[in-house]
Image 1: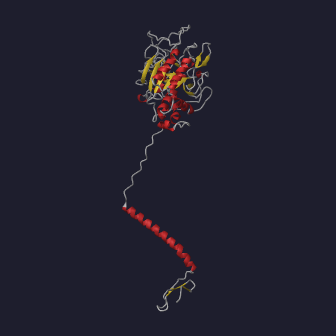
Image 2: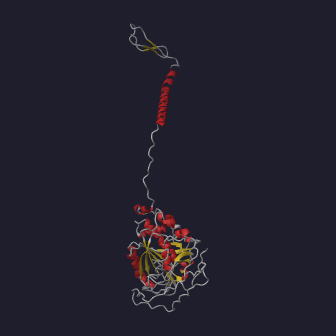
Image 3: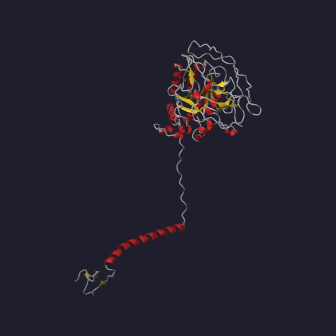
Length: 461
């Protein structure tokens, strides 16, 4: 059965907006947002209408800004999760998973020993793809350790979700052996104050030992955010961020942060045809691209969303590749990991695509000039000493035959050498035999030898 998902109105899993201390930013456009899936019928097919009513639209009047630069206080009021049920029918292997083919390097690395932080809307830890994958979970919103947007669950699973192929579901995370550090930074897809918690969330992830930090959030720049990025980089964390657009207080689109900060891997999204998705935007600097349309992601409650799209999920794929590289090359510093991922991409395919599609196999196995060989040796297949076969037992007959052949060869060589001496001498004598004439004992004391011309050679007395 072909997996089909329809958009449930009012339920969006977005690249979250943010407000900095210096500028008000309204929520990011839903052009690069993942959509929720509808309810499914008893037959497994999507129903025409979602069973949940759409969430109430946010008030046109923005929430008041806090008077200080400190993050707003967390909410203590219970918040209901109003999500449509995920798709539960038959799922086919997503094109993105086939295209990246990251399973090819699993014999070398699956992200083991690497912690990846996901700063997002939380996750559903009970989903089959995430069960047992979370090493640390921090809620900065006060709304509980759950995902009321669906966004964080999808991002986390694409990075390090469990391989479900053995259960008949052809889905897996890029680095299934990595561990997840979840930092719930906001509770829904529209949260004007969530961005002010972002700097603290990044610092929290770095302090938790995350070696890769995924930030699928489009925020405005601020000194606090920039300092948090530097803090994480100083703690040797690779930061990967979605390259969407942020809407400024003047209503115009502007670059998204932290994607636009130096040293952060800024990710755009490509479709199955290899072209940039228009919703990726061109306001932000783009370093690399990854699949970002018609994706299948896990959904809270055990279901799936087969129509997710956006730079948020493209960034997740790159974060997964970063985990593979960090596990395969543990001696590399974060800036070397960034360089390796960018330098091994497939190549630019147009404006806003950076170095082109991320290439997991090359990112792990390529020889990158300038890297210390000792730091990259771990990703190469181990070499074992060669074992030579033991000599066979001596065969008597074979030995006799070998001696005979050797003796014959020596005899032939000697005969050839003798011929080389005798034949020239024979030619000089005209092939006449020579003779030795001996006189009487009284007449000669020495032999007289006739030469080739019948004369004598020697001495007479």
